[in-house]
Image (cartoon, rainbow, N blue to C red):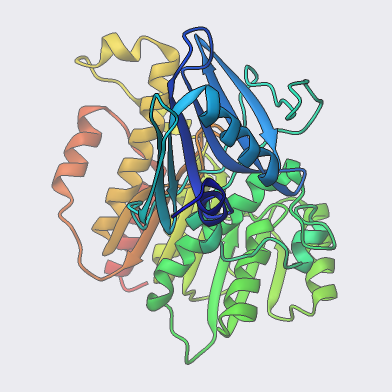
Length: 414
């Protein structure tokens, strides 16, 4: 590559992962500058983060401005520029006499690399190219491969996302709802993973317990029926009558004839006799246990559960060896929550499910970020070790009692 301009034309674009200016020529300036593409006010720009002592100063530029910025930096402030892209990497070295050596090569970035969409912290001011602070929304770092893998695409309007306030009518993601957009796509990725477990030659029944405002319920229907062509019958259940009315009106307005919403309690719902998939997101405390027990009773092929407010074991847990730790309320609460979900996962394994505990969304958004994903295989694990642990810490989870009752009923032929 002959000129610096040619170098910039090839590497400084939306395929850029990051560029780093290093080798400072002056002791009193920045030690290095990291540059990466960001989305700000719906537009692509380039954020330069200059490391000056213990401070990090941020400036946002257009593509033309950042190329000019780097050219001036290599002319006087830095002796090296390293660029990493999704397709091409490059290096610019400047000797003491000003001779410039430019090299490019095929990208060394791993296929799964993704700079997660993050927001600046309170200490990181968004600064314009002129160096003046502006009252601008936080910049979102572009996540190249991750964005490409989003199931619901930004820029393509989806009716339910527009009505629920996640998208504008033009398909642009509302800045304050971007986390919700990411959460919906992440959830759909989990569903995409288990699609081979769902039949495509008949109607699939899906139950969503505690559906709430139903962002994910609508997303499931749209993805499975509209995008993937599955014959699905999805039922959303919640205790709040006003929420159910609104969701029902929306489903009717979209022509989603096989998406239904009903007011009711998880514990005593008898609207169906068999289901293919049960979803329960943020059902509080033992409501999750009743939902999981129902899923097992119905022989659900797939279970997706994000538990919430695991209070039951927090009241029960007791162990002499762990007493010094359990003495601290916040530690006891967290341990009880983790143990609750671990026991639930093991109980499902005992019922013939291959069970995983996965991270649902980032901890910064909510501490309730674990998802239990269970796929029925029929291979049951032994009960002894889980039972011994429950005895050792003196806990009797609701799910264990419910599954025992089911087993007893089946044994009696009821």
